[in-house]
Image 1 (tube, helix red, strand yellow):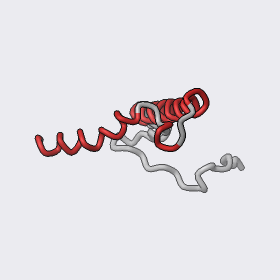
Image 2: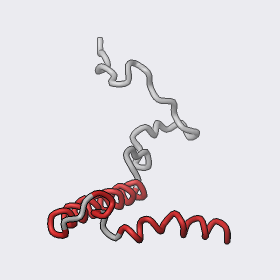
Image 3: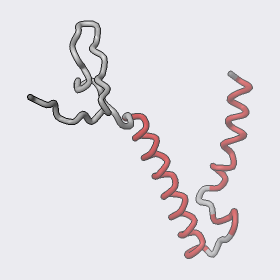
Length: 90
């Protein structure tokens, strides 16, 4: 008597597609994060590293502390004002 190998899906077989073919291993069935997610992660990490290194440099070399240690703080503090102006124009 021949026995089937143990199933990794708990005994449940995936349903066949419209053509009756089991496509559970098809190349289009990818898992993971997409390119846009990778781009956002890289952007966030780059911004974080920029801020941390900029603050460290300003504290160590310039002697600044608190809010004054933020690199290009005028630019970062102007962003909400510019966004508000943009929203009123749009």
